[in-house]
Image 1 (tube, rainbow, N blue to C red):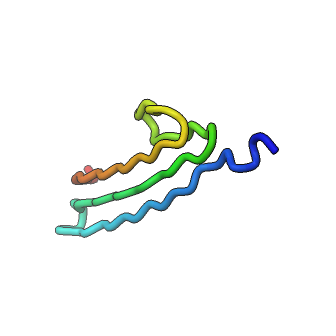
Image 2 (image 1 turned 90 degrees about the vertical axis):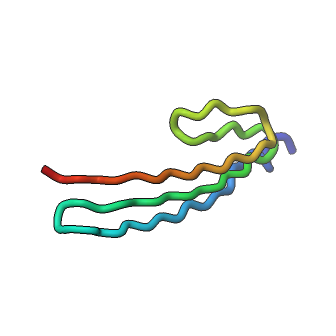
Length: 65
């Protein structure tokens, strides 16, 4: 049956590390695998095609004023 396997499986992990009361570093990593004709993607990332996988890594610093 068409469309039965049109899905996306994924996982995302993240860590935050405070270096002071108002400042912290963060790290995020994720993986997505599109199956069939699914075209799910991370925000701001263009889908390369059907049945494709994507990996995303983000590092940053947050400071509250």
